[in-house]
Length: 175
Image (cartoon, rainbow, N blue to C red):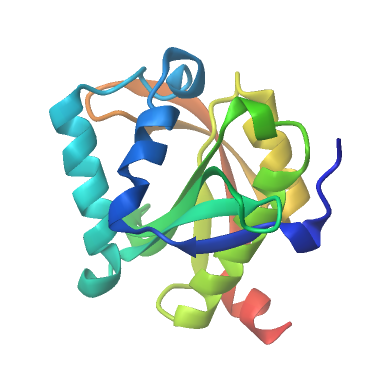
């Protein structure tokens, strides 16, 4: 079943999204990013997502579809240093029943537009593993440009070979 792009929305991360985070925290969903986290680490992540906007650090969203009845996953961006400059980094997760329907690409594009509207950074990057064809396809469909392969540290202390995809937020905001 294909989900029309108009039926995909992003909504700011809220207190009741901890259950969504637990659904995302599985071997299958986290296989490219170090595996599931323990319960305390998950609570820390949830709190950090809630605090991003107040700190000016970024924004996490839940992805909503089926006329707002279904939480399909998460998408968000946050500030980090990359090659000596402040940029936004983006990540997303779409739950298995919603995968393969184009939802991640639409949500990533909506979140990129939100990041562009902040006028805080010029670049938004995503760093999917080179071994993650689905996430690399999301980058392509969401309008990212491939800058090349890079060694990327995630989770902390673990390096992986990733693709460095990016969007010029200044150009996106002007379009």
